[in-house]
Amino acid sequence: MLTYSFENRGSDSLYEFLYKQIKNDILAYRLSPDEKLPSKRALAKHLNVSTITVENAYQQLMAEGYIYSRPKSGFYVAHVSASKKAEQNPPVWNHAGEINPDCFYADFVNNSTSTSSFPFTTWTKLMRETMSDDADSLMVRSPSTGVLKLRQAIAAYLFQFRGMAVEPEQIIVGAGTEYLYGLIIQLLGRNHTYAVEDPGYQKITKIYQANNVNCISIPLDENGIDVDYLNKTKADIVHISPSHHFPTGIVTPVSRRYELLSWASKASGRYIIEDDYDSEFRLLGKPIPSLQSIDVLEKVIYINTFSKSLTSTIRISYMVLPKSLMERYKEELNFYSCTVSNFEQYTLARFIEQGHFEKHINRMRNYYRTQRDAIISCIKQHPYYDRVTIKEENAGLHFLLEVNTKLTDQELIEKAGANGIHISCLSEYYYSHQKARPHTLVLNYSGIEQEKIGRAIELLFSSF
Image (cartoon, rainbow, N blue to C red; front, side):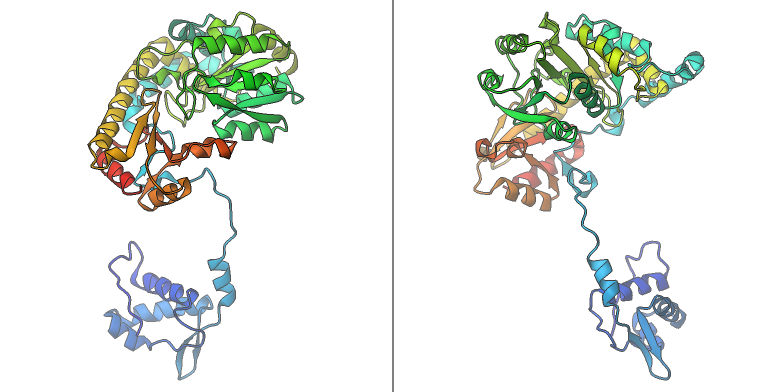
């Protein structure tokens, strides 16, 4: 006799729930083709529901072809192999990079901002002021480089907090760094060889490859990208993050920075792309001065984003071009429309000008420091703390955790996932897998809820 519990039927009516349960049993072949089903009266009595509930469920199943009836005999399971195949074998899609963080108890991979951390009240107030005071400007098409008011605010911020003396006319605003990478490729040309860090953020390589440019990887040493190795290649453009490398956390010292500038000076077509993606969140000491601030030969393209400092859903990024490249941009690419709405640009300009951005950065730096300290404290208090080593905890919104285990990195990731913990390993960020450091986790803590920290660390350790 078919037996189902109706306790977890949710918002379904009784007959809808019963219909779904029988349908699932048919598709899973728990009920065989031509198998006779219980009579309506017998099933209703067994399940303690009304006969009309069973009758409605059977009628729906029959209408959809899952069962059939024989006069004076009863209801039988239909042959639904085609339906089963369609249901059991849906098209296989590659969802790499589209893992839903809600599937996990704690996500140590993706960068996110908690709802309570975003200054909604201030942002809403400034948005209202913008729509009231800048109504006419909002309706005027933005220059391809972005509205002047925002570029002026960014230039002032860079001078005050990053020591960069740049003019608003050197700044280009765009919706996300991926868009800006595409502009750089068009500006510098697809006939060049672009170099990236190994290990590194592999989306950058994918963007270069998608734009049909030759892309090579350059290994790192303890001071950042290996300039000796770089000199042996045919690279024209090198893409680096010297103030806080992801994922190792390495900070490139000033001596290495001058070596890189020297490399760039040896050919007219050489440039350095300085990706300064989360320099505001260095948790020990002041932010490291940018490479652009010591560049006197106009060889550095500086790029940054508000997605890290505000929220990943605000797709506003910007880059600072050397003046010579900006002239080329105006000649060749000025036909592009700015990809950020005027409403957001004017609101962000007010947010920066009125000091809200500085206050937000200071508040978030304290928040992330507290977050990091709580996680590291839980790790150090764990009975199996002697199995791990914490590294680069001052680098930014993530740190490294070396694990003493016999598991492979893939086994670590899968076991942690089964425990509800989303992790990544340093080895995943290497292009040369032979050089990859195994058993080292990259723990991004920006999106971990504080009340979940203790349990998350317990589940993490149970994965080793």
